[in-house]
Image 1: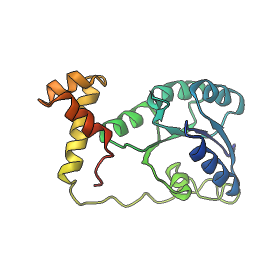
Image 2: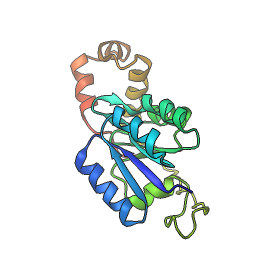
Image 3: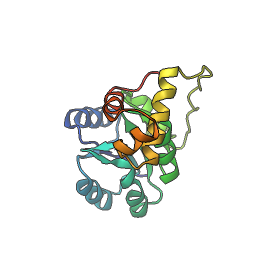
Image 4: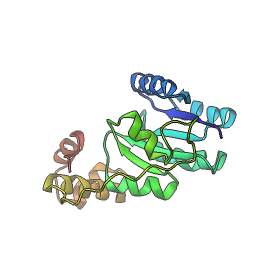
Length: 184
């Protein structure tokens, strides 16, 4: 089995750190910082796994998932994001990603997200147990964040239309969107 991982991430520092950590664990790791490089590496190197950043220099990484799946339908894709929301998680999974993780994430968690054991040479067919699901309710701040993200998605990212739909001033909405989402 091909144990290579393609990291598609526009943050050079994060990408280099992740690639280095994956190589230390015995994986072939490649990096791409933009869509064109990602498609080129996908076609030539044929990695088994892809780590895809949700935000690629302002563009949505979600738009790249169908193209990656077209090149290799068996490829397993994990989406990483610094701004997680339920609506983008659902979209990522519907498009073909196997997992959706919020940054920061450690390498072992990332590898478990692919559904494989941590050591590719020893037990590549083993599947790890899924992470425990929290049964505590979301905070009010987190629910607000999720609702804003859903309405923003419904209005195709249009801030003005979203603000009108939420009966909120545009600048207030922009201020809320510039903050990190509240922890659950």
